Image 1 (tube, rainbow, N blue to C red):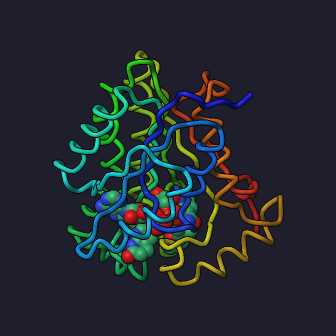
Image 2 (cartoon, rainbow, N blue to C red):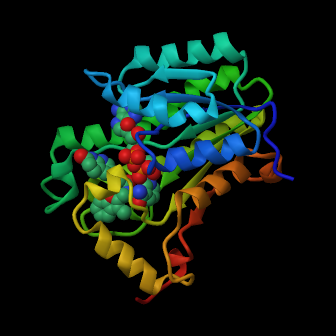
Amino acid sequence: MLNLTGKNALVTGIANNRSIAWGIAQQLHKAGANIGVTYLPDDKGRLEKKVAELVEPLQPSLFVPCNVQDEAQVQAAFEAVKGKWGKLDILIHCLAFANKDDLTGSFVNTSREGFATALEISAYSLLKLCAGAKPLMTEGGSVVTLTYLGGVKVIPNYNVMGIAKAALEMNVRYLASELGPQNIRVNAISAGPIRTLASSAVGGILDMIHHVETVAPLRRTVTQTEVGNTAAFLCSDLASGITGQILYVDAGYEIMGMS
Ligand code: NAD
Ligand code: 0WE
């Protein structure tokens, strides 16, 4: 059975109760894992307070700031893991960012800075977090990241995020290859569209969700809990033979050739 008792799991990307990372954290906790949470610090500490209140029921043994653009914060986060837990078993990478301007209109006009920002936060960060996790995953480990179909097929307005997700998915393969000998598995979940803070900030997400509801084999979208259950599976011994994979949790939408 799925059992994560005694496993230490660091979860990034919780912003609110709609975050996919929150769905994952809850399912990892349910399976018995010890939870550590990182959050994106802001000037007024508002997000910190909100996230702290939200995750309280999971009694996280770690709660640390980690802006992935800040080397020192990333390093400090893993220092905290080392000090508190000694070893790490599970790393959840569940964050992405592109400038809002770059998620509408003309892709060809994406700025140099906008391109770099999206790739740095959404793709390079996986590699950076894996570098921090590697020396702490002394008994092997499992890394799970979140991707989207827009990294493989053209989805209107996803634009530079599509390039970032393509890079993220290739990161998964190179990381899986390099970390495999240490029994660290690296996989991605490609989730169908879900209403979250990030997706709701994008125009037309409701139309996209409606489209999936009419076309996907299961005639619906997926929930944060379903993504969380898949993440828990990937992090468990039940998935001990799986690495380097992109697993679609999208109600089957990806297989359809005509809509
Ligand atoms: P969300 O807004 O809840 O989560 C995004 C997170 O990224 C936030 O917690 C935010 O704080 C964090 N973040 C942004 N910049 C950061 C930085 N510099 N350092 C650290 N953290 C930073 O939205 P979500 O939809 O749950 O997104 C989580 C992941 O799921 C993303 O990778 C997204 O691409 C992916 N995804 C989302 C959907 C969807 O439809 N919602 C579908 C497929 C994949
Ligand atoms: O990966 C994502 C969302 C990524 C995202 C969203 C935002 C909105 C607010 C990254 N950066 C930002 N920056 C902001 O300022 N998804 C998979 C959800 C999503 O985003 C889309 C989608 C879907 C689905 C954008 C265009 C089209 C479809």
